[in-house]
Amino acid sequence: MASVDSRDFSFHALRRCQQRGISQQIVNTILVHADLRVWVGNGCQSLLVSRRRLAELVPDELEPGEAGRLGGVCVVQDVATGEVVTVLRLAGRSGRRYRKQHRCRRHQRPSTENRRRSRQQRVHI
Image (cartoon, rainbow, N blue to C red; front, top):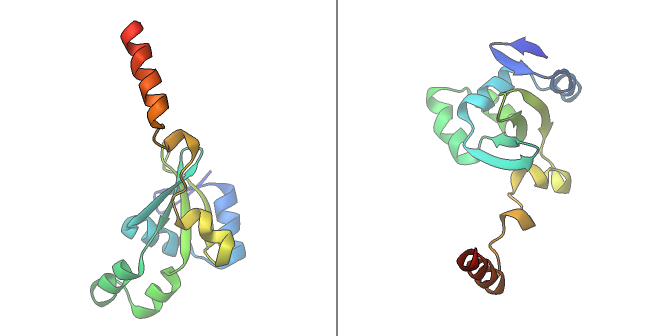
């Protein structure tokens, strides 16, 4: 694990930054200003800066060129350790997993029949 600007980057994240032409400064800016958070599994979440948030930041905190480079970049961070796991550019269908929260069976609300069963089991216990 390498540390840059008091942020922890995994070796994988540093390698992906270099391969994809994304500087650590851009990653740090995303970590500070991210307003979209999507859980992607294994205790990780993807962090993004929305277009609306970029528009708010441009006059005060960011230059227009820097805002253009932030758009479409996603940082996957481990929530428990704060380590940056990977960095990617969101494009097309491949980036959908990191933009949109998926409903998995574990997070879905149980059907009415299952709720009745669990209620009855609690009463008999």
